[in-house]
Image (cartoon, rainbow, N blue to C red; front, side, top):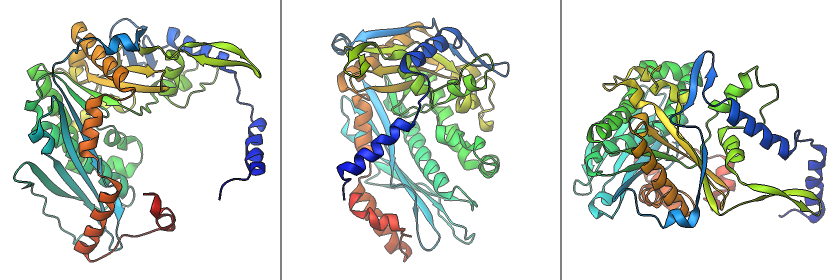
Length: 424
């Protein structure tokens, strides 16, 4: 059933009961204050958690002009991993399956065919065993591995998902790193952000990081990947489509020098206010904000040492992973780009080993801007990798049915599974 008009109006009227605080002009002015006064550098507890790599600035480039520029890198590779999402069975098994794939422009059919597949398995039955050796399939083009996760009182689904995803992605990246001659674009952050976040979530997960070698091994894969690309002088970046970092907003909320409440839920909301161009115009109900849509806007690059970026900073311990290069080379640097045509914001990450060089930094920036201008969103190479790695809803359903037959059990269903079955 749909809402009757009277019910719709009744719900809409609830908005009149809400005083949303400062008006839009005040919020934009406060964003400008943050930009001018707090980010060069941003401190917390005597530490520098954020600082510009070069001069702090906001810039813009015409969408059509940048789309027509010459390419900065002759060839580009993309990497992504897709999963079926954690599935719980009636026999107690919790399983997720991830497959990673690499795309390239110009196309390489053999490379596109290759996959790295990982199945992670959790059970509270300690007699359950898993053969964890790597195996090959598809005439040797692809390889696979099953991994047993030790019994966890909580977070089983989150752990099997993260380890499957990041293990598949990192192993595939390492296996084909030598194929990348100009630029690699990861679909997502530079390091396994979901895994690095565990230490702050719950003591059980913090203990798991300390006691089990698998998470550290996964992070080590990413560290070795960065070292491999630094050794060869080939840059890599991570393109984050839905950035949700809170380093700036959390730090500001804890800063007593900020004498007003911070209104943004995360850093992306702040950067959207800083990068959105336009003006207030008169309207029937007063004034409204009218956004300019002719140019992409973007920030300078920043060095980040706060939140989940801290473990790979010069101050972090990288979860005990050995780093053979100078520590500063592993640090996460990023810039933010805003596409006003779709009202979308993206975060682009790269190791400081590459962005400390002004020429490389500029080439990476212009490459991303051109890609976003052309695609009205993430770079085409990322979307191409996503298509290769994605497991469709129909394929997920078939895989789950196959696992049910294999384990002589069935998926544990909830009422929501039954209710929304036709929507997946």
